[in-house]
Image (cartoon, rainbow, N blue to C red; front, top):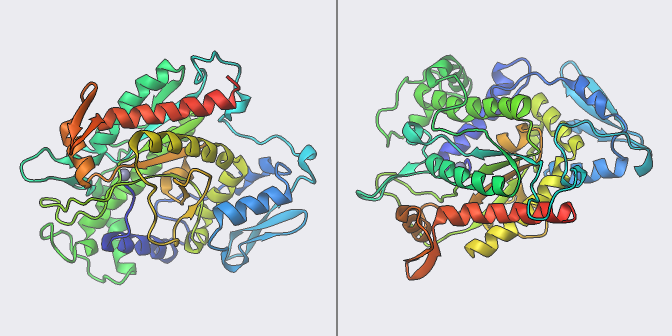
Length: 426
Ligand SMILES: [Zn+2]
């Protein structure tokens, strides 16, 4: 489940945008670190003008580029590193395809891997699985928890971990080296909400809540978003947690691919009396489609350019399309249609893949495929989640269905098998 465009989320989003410019002299996103623009020197002459322009215009900056922060000339791009004082990084283009120098990167595209046997198409591929959210005792805090009557509560972070463990064994059978970004309900970050009380207070004050309250009165408190408790919890379970996962991925795991596993949801209202709906759908995300406000942050602009230059997009889009096709076949779910095009851009050929600038898809420095199948509070998915895991099929709402966990894990594994088999010529 993504950060949803609910009232709460818009509030957080506008806070995140305002706060960084308001309280940090460095003009960074929330808990962001100062960009090391020198790193981009290694990417000089690795890309042609046309390829750079294509990726910028059609993938990463589909909503435009603010204030001339990136300018494309014939021979080079001028990228603003800081606006005050005004500093610019010059990225020189390769003059043509044949004169491109090698792209520095730690991950390996499928077509550069050594040969493999046809029954082990993932041999040598390092795949990190990132089960979304935390689950366990954190599920209520994360607002990834609901319960229908006396039935077992639905907690997204536990469902994603369960699928990840099933997926791991399937991928290992296909030859992959599987790594876990999270393999328990414990956070990767060592921080806790209380560590962010002061930052939460500053953010709230700068955003028009001059005397923020410490605590939420009750779950239905209409002003809970203006409390230090609510904001410090988001800083913990979203920003700090995902940034620490990125450090783990980028400095220890070094995968060739990260698969982020989520279950989707539509607004369910009161978590103790949730609304169950008929709508159910599937989509996958890759990084791109940055908003102008996001590009105005020095760190996000830098991370976008570094990602563009790594050419993760070419690999992750092809993987996402293949996995989406496999998941669509297995689940029979229709593609999700975002209600607006303000944050996403549809990409690829399957009809199920969107570009969007999420923290995880931006920060993990390798191809990232972010899966969002099943609306947890759809009548169908809810019944299947409650049915748990089982062999074979069971009749659910009048249809014979596999366990939802196996269907998820099997279809992702089959998609990856299909992609790597084809890309490695097996
Ligand atoms: Zn999620």
